[in-house]
Amino acid sequence: MIYRPPLMMDYSVAGVNTKLSTIAEICYTISSNFVVTETLRTPSSKLLQADTPTNTDTVEGKEIQKKKREREKEMVLQLVMAPNWCGCGVASANSTKISTNAFKMSSNRFNFSKPYPGRAYRVTAYYSLTTPPYELDALEPYMSKRTVEIHWGKHHNEHVERLNKHLKTSAFYGHTLEEMVKATYNNGSPLVEFNDSSSVWSHDFFWESMQPNGGSMPKGGVLDQIKKDFGTFTNFKDEFTFAALSIFGPGWVWLYLKKNERKLAVAPTQNAISPLVWGDIPIIGLDMWEHAYYLDYKDDRSAYVNNFLDHLVSWHSVMVRMMRAEAFVNLGEPKIPVA
Amino acid sequence: MALLRSIAISSNKTITLAPSARALTTTTLPPLPYSYDALEPVISGEIMMLHHQKHHQTYVTNYNSALELLHTAMDKGDVSAVVGLQSAVKFNGGGHINHSIFWKNLRPVNAGGGEPPHKKLGWQIDTDFGSFNALISKMNAEGAALQGSGWVWLAFDKELKRLKVETTANQDPLVTKGATLVPLLGIDVWEHAYYLQYKNVKLEYLKNIWKVINWEYAGEVYEKEAQ
Figure: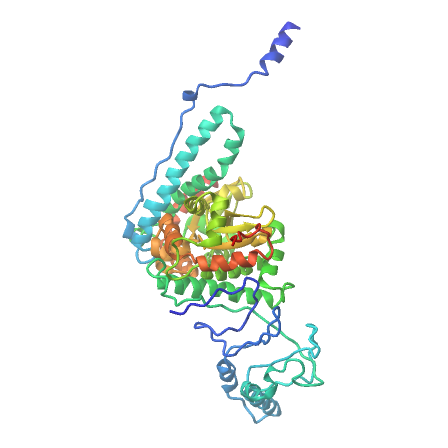
């Protein structure tokens, strides 16, 4: 079973190879906020377009044929960057399209400062479907492979693709996902990109909130914090379950850290809303939309929530998230043992 | 003078009724006019059974308990409790209303389900939407575009005397979109209505459900309201 540690929350990585994606290229991270490359789909569709026969008897036909040949030679990777990396590059008439292979072979591959001197470049970046940190059947029998395949491969994927479609013309292009969620929520009158950006963020968060052989009890600092803020661990579980079952319609239930009050709390939300929109730090997220549990549990929501808490929730992820949250929220002095 | 004063004093009294004077009218789950597997293969028997026996029953049960709590709160004069219960009443009551209409909107194929509307409703559809197929496409598009859970309605506006396609979120009944709207047809696009069979392909469900729609019932409601 593959297990990798959860990603940081503030990520904006695109172009990761996934099992279901047909994106054929690699991504290069230039800085923590920007990602390289506008990767297009594999060139097969382009070649198919180029394969329709042209009538080369006319001058026009010859021109079209010439253009088709050029296009056939070009591969899909067009790497463009601003020479001094100000992030606001200019598309130059001199920018060269080179084949992917040539780029891979070239020594300029990792020299991002000036791979092609004297040329101006432009970066575009889009989101892609990140893979859960475990195999799709790793959560059996509490979440079946079929559910994960459809939930991740269809629903989550659909949100990513719709988000990318919005981003082609949106003013929020270039924002990190978290920034976009906060900005497009627009204090309660959400803009059109909110639903998809928040869904993408929440679903990434959800897959990483679970692990195979999860559940049972947290340890150490996490357990202490939960006991401090909920009384007992059982109280936390009861509150979480009650909140999950109280949602009218589709929604999510969150364990989150309140920044101002510096304590953990549980809250249900509607549709795709997450604690990000009101400025707090999510720690656990559970998808209570029907598509998340209907195939496995039909209408038995309490079984779904109980199984999540007892067998799926990743306290490892919780620990990492709390550690990161402590950079933003002072949770008090640590208990340093006296020698 | 004394008469006026006594009237002024009496208008300040609170109106009290003995609790038993206001009867608590609870609802019950209406039976389906056909068997659970009668709508196969458009909607599977498993979905119909779960939808009716579990989901609709839950709305009925929770509505009844919300109603009881509401009556208690009203008797005690607990305003915040009364207001707090409104969302539960709207959700569960709305769920009961909507699903009761839904069961009547469906009909097995061998009993006339899917037959397009004729007579007055048919003409009104042609007037307001251009053609029957245009209406179908419009309702399918609105249903597919709905984010989250909700309903798609073919509504008749009593005041404007015309048909409209509306959507409502969660279990909001159609009247929340307009007090003069009368539901002729409602299609449930909550995931529980199609997920077991169609998974995430909501559009397939919407395209297929027209095969079991009961246009006769819609026509009757329309003719009654369009007097």
